Image (cartoon, rainbow, N blue to C red; front, side, top):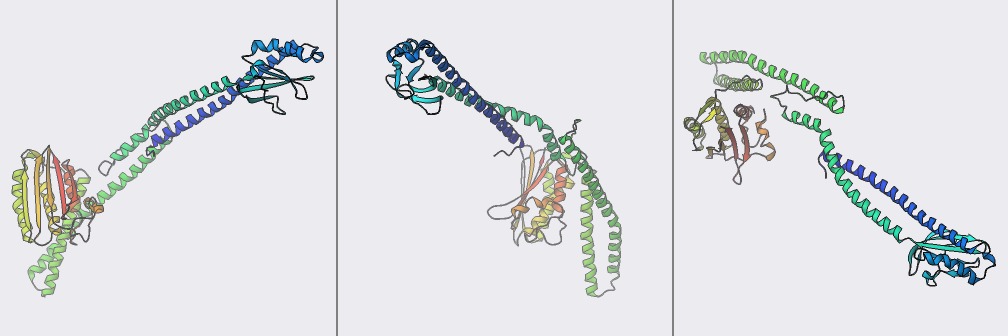
Length: 452
């Protein structure tokens, strides 16, 4: 139910506080009830003492009329408070107070202090006091005790509800305060990526579990930063070192072809070798570009310009490229505004997207390039009529070396770096790039946006 740790802590705090208060209220209930009942017992005891005094020391020699007269002198003045029975050891009633209307007070054998109910009078607290030859039974109404206990329960219930609400609010506030360092750590961890591994978690001066966690995470990011730096240096240095031997291999292969002293099968093998060398050289160039982007040494020549002339210059090249593969090319542009972008790199992005669309499109298919300048953004979409991508792969295609066999976007010759390069270029423009399947006819739409 509670997905937030802060809410769970607040709930636990409120539950603990409310249960503790409820236990105190139960103990208070028992104590208060015991004290009130004890007060009734004291009243009965006081009334019994008064009756003993009025009976006198010679009560054993008195007849029933004399006993009735002496007791009634005491009981009549307190008839609103006490019910009185007097009987002998053989349980013959010798006296009824008038308020009993001839009904005897219930007797519980073996008990001298107990609760009972008198018909017509209601619940009472009974005390039985034994004299030689007489049993004096005195009862006093206990309705006020019951009413007081009901009021106590209502007050306690209201206080429990108030306590629950107050402790929830207090617990939530305390949890927010206690988890503030955790939120700060989470926000910092969310910001840290491969492009800013130097950022670190804030560490409080107080030595506690949270500060220890922050130090542990900082140490982990130190190791990650060192590893990333080593990978970047290796990629850049290895790519750079590979260019010279590849150039030499290309030169020797071309020299052999010029000499022309090979059989046709050998000459075909040399052509394949040169083609693969060119492919490998392209991969190295892409890796070098990504390494420079990761190292933040790539600089753009951002110029505020209208995209219309740029697109008009790109469209003929794209049309030739598409039509050469037996496909159709459609282009549309809408809007005019000055957008800051590097034409060379955005041209590379468009070429990559169009090339991918060509690979995926069926024969006689159509590729569309739609451009629109609107609402502070330049939006460009490249669409094909291929099979689209599985939903799980739509975001992954922008990761490095990711290829999706069986979708038409992988012809076996790609490096899996083209869309990753597109994303890096768009990141340098403070833009973004995404892909989506086109419903219901199929195909893929790749969209990039650049703010202005």
